[in-house]
Amino acid sequence: MNTRIAMPLTASVAAILALASMECRAIEPLDTFSARIGGYVTDFDTQVRADGETRSGTEVDLQRDFGLDKKNTVALVGVTWRPWDNHEFGLSYYQDDADATRRISRDIEFDGTLYEADSTVRASVDLDAYDLYYVWWAANNERWALGPRFGLVWYRMRLGLDVEIDSAGNRIDGAISETVDADLPAPSIGGSWRWAPAEQWRFSADVGYFSANVNDIDADITFGRIGVEWFPWERTGISLDYTRRRITADAEKSDFIGNLEFVDSGLRLGVTYRF
Image (cartoon, rainbow, N blue to C red; front, top):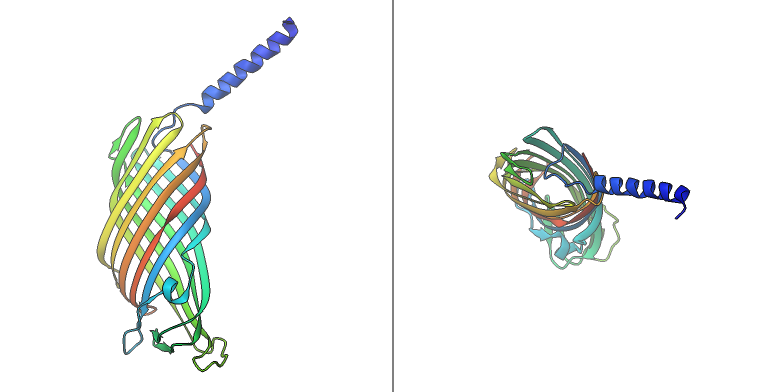
């Protein structure tokens, strides 16, 4: 082989091998900082009862009674920060909305307003979710970490019903309507686990539970998440996890009095940058 060709070729191969060795360096179970952007394939299941001033409302299932689509795909952003070896903070955010119109088959009382059977009603939901957590990594080893987790998801939910056609067939285009706004804090106490068994792979799991009266809301909350990350590059990888959170709450707030049963679950796929 020509010497002038062999020398650049040898240098190129050496550079590629050096880059590959950098990219394949073993991933750690914990990051100092990470940022994630991706999609959340949501699966919401919501039952709500909005009481009026003098009597209880009707319990309704937004999917069954009004035909709201349970599934949607929304954007998700999140960051984590570990300023000290054993202390980690995280924050993520997503927003979802849905609406549907259906001719209802029974009388429904919602926030003091009666929606008569055979009326055509438009139902709408707008949701903002802020997910915060703190983990103390009591066990922090080279390949795995384990510790107690304290989480809080703050849901800001807006629910509305508008009559488009009344039971007599008259079009009234929302002249009969009610909207309730509910701020729903969902704390949880549990644990977190991280495991990096191979150079490019990391597995994780979080669980939590809470039952208490918080801010005029008597709630039971269960939470679970399991995930996997693949890092073909040292700092950039792909993440996939499944999350499920169930909330049952009785509220006595000025902006919402009633009961809410709410399941927030689904798959989340994203790209993560870490160091």
